[in-house]
Length: 340
Image 1 (cartoon, rainbow, N blue to C red):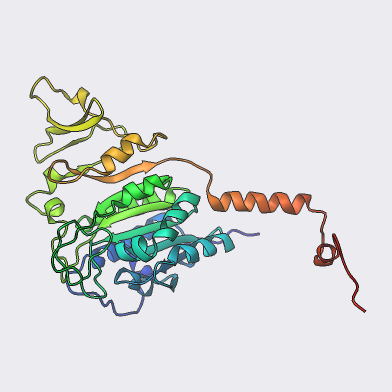
Image 2 (cartoon, one colour; image 1 turned 90 degrees about the vertical axis):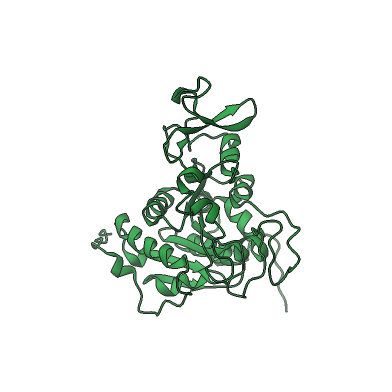
């Protein structure tokens, strides 16, 4: 079979003719634009991409991408994405979801897609609120937040998506704010190049119902001190003066200042996303402001057999070894009866 020629594409090739209908100032615009700029860098024809969404503001995404796509059922996008990938393993499958869609009604599908390590990319827009239905609290809303559905304040403990994913056996986890388009593009590329389930959590702002929900991390005045950008082989150094770092003190992480109390750069933890043991990945992915900076970039990227690879290998082996060559062979095997 002749190879299909890959056309040179630009972001315009991935922009549909649909009017983008998010609230002015919504972080979703930056995510959409970053995706449209990232995909041409992968040198894959747009016909090979499928965007699948559930329900929510984020789930309008497939309409705005000039690719194949499905707008599916609330919380059930992972099931559709899994079916698409198994039906045609050559497709690049992206699931777009929100914190409510993925972690509330879709929680069961979310953890099992990750457990199976199906080769799809899950982009989780986390604005810590239900935006489409006008401001109810979500599974990631912080304790104490007052919302329309809980005016006296939330008493729940919120999910940490990366922690939930790691507990489900995640092989790829990344986090990025919607205020950094270049970093989003880099993370999207890394996710697509990873074989297995990729989870990209985007700290996304809902300007109407939960404005500045990540302001203590993404605000211009604090972002250098509250964001730790991870890079394999490099020490975990951050801060406006790049003089702060993360060390492991006995069994706990600790923020230190290089040059104080005899601390040198050699004392700082070095990031390794490929480490199989998830202990340190769990610790750094759950750091939170203001005590710690929030880990950004690729947190974990390990290799493991994907669900679709396993299924295809099993199917090929069954085809080779089966004694049934036709459907009649199968129907007439075992106990059969003749009805007069």
